[in-house]
Image 1 (cartoon, helix red, strand yellow):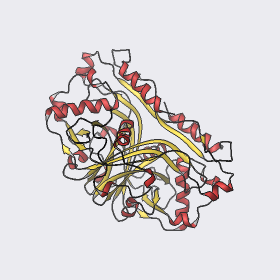
Image 2 (cartoon, rainbow over the protein chains, first blue to last red):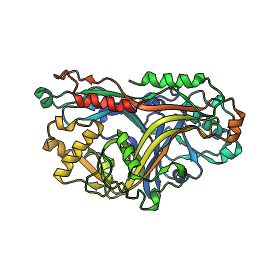
Image 3 (tube, each protein chain N blue to C red):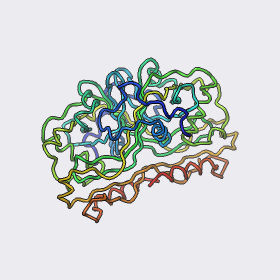
Image 4 (tube, rainbow over the protein chains, first blue to last red):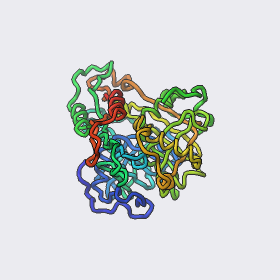
Amino acid sequence: MTAGRRADQPLSPTGRSTPRRERERAQSDRDTLYDVLDASLVCHLAVVVDGVPLALPTVFAVDLDGPDEGGTLYVHGSVASRSLVQAPGQDVSVTMTVLDGIVLARSGFNHSMNYRSAVVVGRPRLVTGEAERSHALDLLVDHVTPGRSATLRRPTRKELSATTVLALPLHEASVKRRVGDPSDEDVDVEAGGVWAGVLPLGLRAGEPVTGADVDVAAVPEHVTARVAALNRRSP
Amino acid sequence: MTAGRRADQPLSPTGRSTPRRERERAQSDRDTLYDVLDASLVCHLAVVVDGVPLALPTVFAVDLDGPDEGGTLYVHGSVASRSLVQAPGQDVSVTMTVLDGIVLARSGFNHSMNYRSAVVVGRPRLVTGEAERSHALDLLVDHVTPGRSATLRRPTRKELSATTVLALPLHEASVKRRVGDPSDEDVDVEAGGVWAGVLPLGLRAGEPVTGADVDVAAVPEHVTARVAALNRRSP
């Protein structure tokens, strides 16, 4: 993902996505949003389904040159998915969360996580145009493994008709981040005697495992590059 | 976490949490639920806030000997948190997601993730009893770093009054899991020529970083044990 073409656009045009708590953790620039999107493999799509808010894990993709100002977020799934069927017509949210560390303070109260998270809020649009659907599906594959879609055959008509694609403008979002040491009470620092610090965390990729019935032995460069890129970020 | 005392209790007493799609991925035994809870550091609490379903990342804890049959799930946060304030009185859900791998198929359509996820649904209870609140806060610290809470001072009255604790019965839940190789179309397997396989993923912990102003140099055993436990599961 490259720098946003609208990095100057405010993230919270309305009050509902402006974090009210822990303001020191709220981020207001678009580049921080794009960084969290780039660092996340999956998101949680929150939709009210039959009266209950459900957050379902799913892959996503971002098109900074998409139809929406500030960029377009895509999610997809089976046409039978209740969440995707019920999402258009209601406000939904999409959350990305990257865990960077366990924060071990001197008191239970000040324990925390180092993390980066983004919540995008809006009313999703059902993507019906063939060109946009096809492009979005490529982006979804490439978000998880950059460069992969160009090595694959095109989707069949049957596959396309079995797939729902939703678009959400990257218009209204909140981004939060916590970094660094524990924040302890002065009285606990003065009392001393308790170890405190941070346990760094990160997703790590292992060696690619070739499928049992695959006739190509050599792991392609885009896959080894993915392993390397993930592990550069991992502790 | 130990084996559940009610491992025989059905997970989906009502229809709303019974997965309708991808039935081969749905799991119906409680031990699989407990495994996912045990493997997850954080959850996403989905609550309708001001009309919008929001999924917010937060730590959680499980008490299999808690007041609810099948166990009790606890989440906590600031008394100023909109999600926690608005959650009691409405149905909410709590999702745990563990990413185990990227599934690279021969077609874009069959790309997937290997994962384990659990969605717990129910109406949360505001925990008001002092003993249960105190126990839940210890469990929350210990879920992230087992053994930690016993090394810390007790919470102050001020800290307790600044904290909201919610309990959700582990009564209604759905658990899904995908493991193994890509599932490709026969025609794509026969055509050949495309590498396919799995990129294993897992959270990895780095070396503990002692806080700048900490007077205890030795990293305690419960912290090094946590690093080892996390990294045993990582690829």
